[in-house]
Length: 335
Image (cartoon, rainbow, N blue to C red; front, side, top):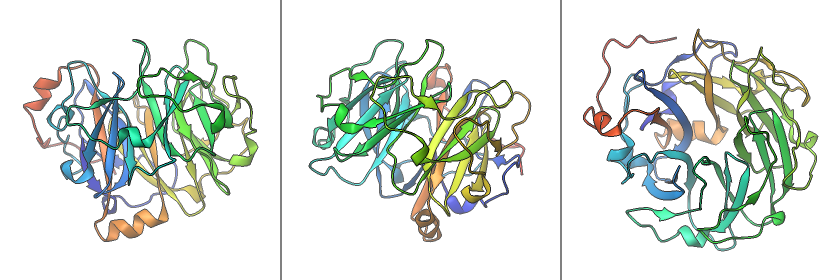
Protein backbone atom coordinates (compact mmCIF):
# COMPACT_ATOMS: atom_id res chain seq x y z
CA UNK A 1 0.00 0.00 0.00
CA UNK A 2 1.06 3.57 -0.61
CA UNK A 3 -0.42 7.05 -1.00
CA UNK A 4 0.16 9.62 -3.73
CA UNK A 5 -1.06 13.16 -4.19
CA UNK A 6 -3.81 13.53 -6.79
CA UNK A 7 -1.81 16.40 -8.30
CA UNK A 8 0.66 13.77 -9.59
CA UNK A 9 -1.88 12.95 -12.29
CA UNK A 10 -3.28 15.27 -14.92
CA UNK A 11 -6.54 14.51 -16.71
CA UNK A 12 -6.12 12.94 -20.15
CA UNK A 13 -8.55 12.52 -23.01
CA UNK A 14 -10.34 9.19 -22.97
CA UNK A 15 -8.74 6.37 -24.95
CA UNK A 16 -5.17 7.09 -23.82
CA UNK A 17 -2.69 4.47 -22.66
CA UNK A 18 -2.11 6.13 -19.28
CA UNK A 19 1.07 6.36 -17.23
CA UNK A 20 2.69 4.15 -14.65
CA UNK A 21 1.12 4.56 -11.19
CA UNK A 22 2.97 1.88 -9.26
CA UNK A 23 5.67 -0.73 -9.72
CA UNK A 24 4.56 -4.34 -9.42
CA UNK A 25 6.37 -7.67 -9.37
CA UNK A 26 5.44 -10.58 -11.62
CA UNK A 27 3.32 -12.25 -8.92
CA UNK A 28 1.65 -9.01 -7.80
CA UNK A 29 -1.17 -6.85 -9.14
CA UNK A 30 -3.03 -3.69 -8.18
CA UNK A 31 -6.41 -4.48 -6.61
CA UNK A 32 -7.83 -1.34 -4.93
CA UNK A 33 -7.82 2.36 -5.73
CA UNK A 34 -9.31 4.86 -3.26
CA UNK A 35 -9.56 8.65 -3.10
CA UNK A 36 -9.47 9.82 0.53
CA UNK A 37 -8.37 12.66 2.81
CA UNK A 38 -5.16 12.21 4.77
CA UNK A 39 -7.18 12.59 7.98
CA UNK A 40 -9.74 9.90 7.15
CA UNK A 41 -9.94 6.54 8.85
CA UNK A 42 -10.12 3.57 6.50
CA UNK A 43 -11.97 0.43 7.49
CA UNK A 44 -10.07 -2.46 5.89
CA UNK A 45 -12.13 -5.62 5.43
CA UNK A 46 -10.29 -8.90 4.83
CA UNK A 47 -11.10 -12.14 2.99
CA UNK A 48 -11.52 -13.80 6.41
CA UNK A 49 -14.39 -11.47 7.37
CA UNK A 50 -12.39 -9.27 9.76
CA UNK A 51 -12.19 -5.47 9.84
CA UNK A 52 -9.12 -3.37 10.70
CA UNK A 53 -8.75 0.38 11.27
CA UNK A 54 -6.06 2.39 9.47
CA UNK A 55 -5.45 6.15 9.29
CA UNK A 56 -4.55 7.35 5.79
CA UNK A 57 -1.52 9.33 7.01
CA UNK A 58 -0.06 6.07 8.39
CA UNK A 59 0.19 4.74 4.82
CA UNK A 60 3.57 5.85 3.42
CA UNK A 61 3.69 8.60 0.81
CA UNK A 62 5.65 7.20 -2.14
CA UNK A 63 6.57 7.96 -5.74
CA UNK A 64 4.75 6.55 -8.75
CA UNK A 65 7.51 3.99 -9.36
CA UNK A 66 7.55 2.69 -5.79
CA UNK A 67 5.75 -0.50 -4.74
CA UNK A 68 4.82 0.89 -1.33
CA UNK A 69 4.82 -0.91 2.02
CA UNK A 70 3.54 -4.51 2.48
CA UNK A 71 0.16 -4.65 4.21
CA UNK A 72 1.57 -7.04 6.81
CA UNK A 73 3.69 -4.12 8.05
CA UNK A 74 0.62 -1.91 8.45
CA UNK A 75 -1.98 -4.35 9.79
CA UNK A 76 -1.74 -7.53 11.94
CA UNK A 77 -2.88 -9.85 9.15
CA UNK A 78 -2.87 -13.62 9.66
CA UNK A 79 -1.21 -16.00 7.20
CA UNK A 80 -3.22 -16.12 3.98
CA UNK A 81 -5.29 -13.07 4.95
CA UNK A 82 -5.58 -10.13 2.55
CA UNK A 83 -7.62 -6.94 2.29
CA UNK A 84 -10.56 -7.22 -0.13
CA UNK A 85 -12.54 -4.02 0.57
CA UNK A 86 -11.67 -0.56 1.93
CA UNK A 87 -14.12 2.06 3.22
CA UNK A 88 -13.25 5.60 4.42
CA UNK A 89 -15.34 6.82 7.38
CA UNK A 90 -15.52 10.19 9.14
CA UNK A 91 -17.51 9.07 12.19
CA UNK A 92 -19.85 6.47 13.68
CA UNK A 93 -23.22 8.25 13.70
CA UNK A 94 -26.21 6.69 15.40
CA UNK A 95 -28.86 5.40 12.95
CA UNK A 96 -26.29 4.69 10.22
CA UNK A 97 -25.22 1.30 8.97
CA UNK A 98 -22.35 -0.35 7.14
CA UNK A 99 -23.83 -2.23 4.21
CA UNK A 100 -21.71 -5.13 2.91
CA UNK A 101 -21.82 -7.28 -0.22
CA UNK A 102 -19.83 -10.42 -1.04
CA UNK A 103 -18.59 -11.90 -4.30
CA UNK A 104 -21.27 -14.62 -4.13
CA UNK A 105 -24.04 -12.03 -4.00
CA UNK A 106 -24.81 -12.04 -0.26
CA UNK A 107 -25.57 -8.74 1.50
CA UNK A 108 -25.91 -7.63 5.12
CA UNK A 109 -26.04 -4.41 7.09
CA UNK A 110 -24.72 -3.78 10.58
CA UNK A 111 -25.11 -0.74 12.84
CA UNK A 112 -22.03 1.50 12.62
CA UNK A 113 -21.89 1.70 16.41
CA UNK A 114 -20.67 -1.91 16.42
CA UNK A 115 -17.48 -0.73 14.65
CA UNK A 116 -16.83 2.34 16.82
CA UNK A 117 -14.59 0.54 19.30
CA UNK A 118 -11.30 0.02 17.53
CA UNK A 119 -9.18 -3.03 18.29
CA UNK A 120 -5.55 -3.33 17.26
CA UNK A 121 -5.97 -7.01 16.35
CA UNK A 122 -9.09 -6.42 14.24
CA UNK A 123 -12.73 -7.35 14.75
CA UNK A 124 -15.07 -9.91 13.20
CA UNK A 125 -17.27 -8.12 10.63
CA UNK A 126 -19.17 -11.01 9.01
CA UNK A 127 -19.13 -14.77 8.58
CA UNK A 128 -17.86 -15.91 5.16
CA UNK A 129 -17.88 -19.22 3.31
CA UNK A 130 -14.49 -20.56 2.20
CA UNK A 131 -15.13 -19.64 -1.48
CA UNK A 132 -16.56 -16.17 -0.77
CA UNK A 133 -15.04 -12.78 0.02
CA UNK A 134 -16.16 -9.21 0.68
CA UNK A 135 -16.42 -7.07 -2.46
CA UNK A 136 -17.93 -3.75 -1.42
CA UNK A 137 -18.98 -1.72 1.60
CA UNK A 138 -21.00 1.48 1.96
CA UNK A 139 -22.46 3.70 4.67
CA UNK A 140 -26.30 3.92 4.64
CA UNK A 141 -28.95 5.64 6.75
CA UNK A 142 -31.66 2.97 6.67
CA UNK A 143 -33.73 4.57 3.87
CA UNK A 144 -31.40 4.24 0.87
CA UNK A 145 -31.62 2.26 -2.35
CA UNK A 146 -28.88 -0.28 -3.04
CA UNK A 147 -27.45 -1.37 -6.40
CA UNK A 148 -25.40 -4.51 -7.01
CA UNK A 149 -23.55 -5.13 -10.29
CA UNK A 150 -22.04 -8.43 -11.44
CA UNK A 151 -19.24 -9.36 -13.83
CA UNK A 152 -21.95 -10.68 -16.16
CA UNK A 153 -23.02 -7.09 -16.77
CA UNK A 154 -26.25 -7.37 -14.77
CA UNK A 155 -27.52 -4.97 -12.08
CA UNK A 156 -30.17 -5.27 -9.39
CA UNK A 157 -31.60 -2.31 -7.46
CA UNK A 158 -33.69 -2.71 -4.30
CA UNK A 159 -34.70 -0.87 -1.12
CA UNK A 160 -32.28 -1.04 1.77
CA UNK A 161 -35.25 -1.81 4.04
CA UNK A 162 -35.46 -5.24 2.37
CA UNK A 163 -32.39 -6.19 4.44
CA UNK A 164 -32.77 -6.15 8.23
CA UNK A 165 -29.93 -5.05 10.51
CA UNK A 166 -27.77 -7.98 11.67
CA UNK A 167 -24.98 -8.63 14.12
CA UNK A 168 -21.32 -8.70 13.15
CA UNK A 169 -21.12 -12.49 12.94
CA UNK A 170 -24.17 -13.00 10.67
CA UNK A 171 -23.71 -14.33 7.12
CA UNK A 172 -26.28 -12.09 5.45
CA UNK A 173 -29.02 -12.73 2.88
CA UNK A 174 -29.17 -13.14 -0.91
CA UNK A 175 -28.81 -9.82 -2.73
CA UNK A 176 -28.42 -10.89 -6.37
CA UNK A 177 -28.74 -14.22 -8.17
CA UNK A 178 -25.79 -15.12 -10.43
CA UNK A 179 -24.49 -18.15 -12.29
CA UNK A 180 -21.52 -19.99 -10.75
CA UNK A 181 -18.88 -18.49 -13.05
CA UNK A 182 -19.78 -14.85 -12.31
CA UNK A 183 -19.04 -12.66 -9.29
CA UNK A 184 -20.37 -9.47 -7.75
CA UNK A 185 -18.05 -6.58 -8.64
CA UNK A 186 -19.65 -3.42 -7.20
CA UNK A 187 -21.97 -2.09 -4.50
CA UNK A 188 -23.49 1.37 -5.09
CA UNK A 189 -25.90 3.56 -3.08
CA UNK A 190 -27.56 5.59 -5.89
CA UNK A 191 -28.33 9.29 -5.51
CA UNK A 192 -30.43 11.78 -7.47
CA UNK A 193 -29.04 13.35 -10.69
CA UNK A 194 -26.26 10.78 -10.93
CA UNK A 195 -25.07 8.29 -13.52
CA UNK A 196 -23.61 4.82 -13.19
CA UNK A 197 -20.24 4.59 -14.94
CA UNK A 198 -19.39 1.01 -15.90
CA UNK A 199 -16.06 -0.21 -17.32
CA UNK A 200 -15.07 -3.56 -18.78
CA UNK A 201 -11.87 -5.59 -18.69
CA UNK A 202 -10.73 -4.49 -22.17
CA UNK A 203 -11.06 -0.76 -21.42
CA UNK A 204 -14.59 0.05 -22.60
CA UNK A 205 -16.91 2.22 -20.54
CA UNK A 206 -20.07 4.30 -20.56
CA UNK A 207 -22.38 6.34 -18.38
CA UNK A 208 -26.01 5.34 -17.83
CA UNK A 209 -28.57 7.45 -15.98
CA UNK A 210 -29.41 6.02 -12.57
CA UNK A 211 -33.12 6.33 -13.37
CA UNK A 212 -32.79 3.66 -16.07
CA UNK A 213 -32.26 1.01 -13.39
CA UNK A 214 -35.69 -0.02 -12.04
CA UNK A 215 -36.28 -0.90 -8.39
CA UNK A 216 -36.90 -4.63 -8.00
CA UNK A 217 -36.88 -7.06 -5.12
CA UNK A 218 -33.56 -8.32 -3.78
CA UNK A 219 -32.35 -11.77 -4.78
CA UNK A 220 -33.26 -11.44 -8.47
CA UNK A 221 -30.98 -11.70 -11.52
CA UNK A 222 -31.44 -8.02 -12.27
CA UNK A 223 -31.38 -6.14 -15.58
CA UNK A 224 -28.64 -5.55 -18.15
CA UNK A 225 -26.20 -2.79 -17.09
CA UNK A 226 -23.64 -3.34 -19.89
CA UNK A 227 -23.68 -5.69 -22.86
CA UNK A 228 -20.59 -7.86 -22.31
CA UNK A 229 -19.00 -9.50 -25.35
CA UNK A 230 -15.60 -10.87 -26.37
CA UNK A 231 -14.79 -7.36 -27.63
CA UNK A 232 -15.19 -5.47 -24.36
CA UNK A 233 -14.84 -8.35 -21.89
CA UNK A 234 -16.57 -8.86 -18.53
CA UNK A 235 -17.57 -5.99 -16.27
CA UNK A 236 -14.78 -5.13 -13.80
CA UNK A 237 -15.90 -1.88 -12.19
CA UNK A 238 -18.85 0.46 -11.65
CA UNK A 239 -19.06 3.76 -9.76
CA UNK A 240 -21.61 6.51 -9.30
CA UNK A 241 -20.58 9.79 -10.96
CA UNK A 242 -21.89 13.32 -11.40
CA UNK A 243 -21.31 16.03 -14.02
CA UNK A 244 -17.85 17.59 -13.65
CA UNK A 245 -16.31 14.56 -11.95
CA UNK A 246 -13.12 12.83 -13.01
CA UNK A 247 -12.23 9.17 -12.63
CA UNK A 248 -9.02 7.25 -12.13
CA UNK A 249 -8.68 3.88 -13.86
CA UNK A 250 -5.90 1.40 -13.16
CA UNK A 251 -4.77 -1.85 -14.76
CA UNK A 252 -3.33 -5.02 -13.26
CA UNK A 253 0.12 -3.88 -14.47
CA UNK A 254 -0.04 -0.58 -12.56
CA UNK A 255 -0.94 1.73 -15.47
CA UNK A 256 -3.28 4.55 -14.43
CA UNK A 257 -5.41 6.97 -16.45
CA UNK A 258 -7.16 10.02 -15.05
CA UNK A 259 -9.92 11.28 -17.33
CA UNK A 260 -13.01 13.50 -17.24
CA UNK A 261 -16.37 11.84 -16.83
CA UNK A 262 -17.99 14.31 -19.25
CA UNK A 263 -15.87 12.87 -22.09
CA UNK A 264 -17.42 9.42 -21.64
CA UNK A 265 -20.63 8.92 -23.62
CA UNK A 266 -24.01 8.55 -21.94
CA UNK A 267 -25.59 5.41 -23.37
CA UNK A 268 -28.46 3.05 -22.59
CA UNK A 269 -28.14 -0.03 -20.43
CA UNK A 270 -27.95 -2.59 -23.26
CA UNK A 271 -24.82 -1.17 -24.97
CA UNK A 272 -21.09 -2.02 -24.97
CA UNK A 273 -19.66 1.44 -24.28
CA UNK A 274 -16.76 3.38 -25.82
CA UNK A 275 -13.00 3.08 -25.42
CA UNK A 276 -11.85 4.82 -22.21
CA UNK A 277 -8.40 3.25 -21.80
CA UNK A 278 -6.31 1.25 -24.26
CA UNK A 279 -4.65 -1.62 -22.37
CA UNK A 280 -1.42 -3.07 -23.66
CA UNK A 281 -1.04 -6.70 -24.63
CA UNK A 282 -1.69 -9.06 -21.68
CA UNK A 283 -2.94 -6.09 -19.62
CA UNK A 284 -6.41 -5.85 -18.08
CA UNK A 285 -8.35 -3.07 -16.42
CA UNK A 286 -9.01 -3.97 -12.77
CA UNK A 287 -10.34 -0.94 -10.90
CA UNK A 288 -11.59 2.63 -11.03
CA UNK A 289 -12.41 5.36 -8.54
CA UNK A 290 -14.37 8.60 -8.72
CA UNK A 291 -12.60 11.93 -8.19
CA UNK A 292 -15.12 14.62 -7.21
CA UNK A 293 -14.57 18.34 -7.80
CA UNK A 294 -14.11 18.86 -4.05
CA UNK A 295 -11.24 16.35 -4.11
CA UNK A 296 -9.37 18.51 -6.61
CA UNK A 297 -9.61 21.53 -4.35
CA UNK A 298 -8.41 19.49 -1.42
CA UNK A 299 -5.49 18.06 -3.35
CA UNK A 300 -4.23 21.58 -4.07
CA UNK A 301 -3.92 22.01 -0.30
CA UNK A 302 -2.21 18.59 0.00
CA UNK A 303 -5.23 17.34 1.94
CA UNK A 304 -6.54 14.68 -0.47
CA UNK A 305 -4.49 11.66 -1.38
CA UNK A 306 -4.94 8.72 -3.68
CA UNK A 307 -4.49 5.46 -1.78
CA UNK A 308 -3.33 2.53 -3.89
CA UNK A 309 -3.52 -0.93 -2.35
CA UNK A 310 -1.57 -3.62 -4.19
CA UNK A 311 -2.62 -7.06 -2.98
CA UNK A 312 -0.20 -9.95 -3.51
CA UNK A 313 -1.41 -12.46 -6.03
CA UNK A 314 -0.32 -15.57 -4.16
CA UNK A 315 3.29 -14.91 -3.19
CA UNK A 316 4.55 -15.14 0.38
CA UNK A 317 4.05 -11.75 2.03
CA UNK A 318 6.95 -12.03 4.53
CA UNK A 319 9.38 -11.98 1.60
CA UNK A 320 7.78 -8.77 0.34
CA UNK A 321 8.16 -7.29 3.80
CA UNK A 322 11.92 -7.47 3.47
CA UNK A 323 11.66 -4.99 0.60
CA UNK A 324 9.83 -2.42 2.70
CA UNK A 325 9.29 0.83 0.76
CA UNK A 326 11.81 -0.22 -1.84
CA UNK A 327 11.85 1.88 -5.01
CA UNK A 328 12.16 0.01 -8.28
CA UNK A 329 14.91 1.72 -10.31
CA UNK A 330 14.82 1.64 -14.05
CA UNK A 331 11.05 1.13 -14.16
CA UNK A 332 9.86 2.54 -17.49
CA UNK A 333 7.43 5.43 -17.18
CA UNK A 334 4.34 5.04 -19.33
CA UNK A 335 2.96 8.39 -20.52
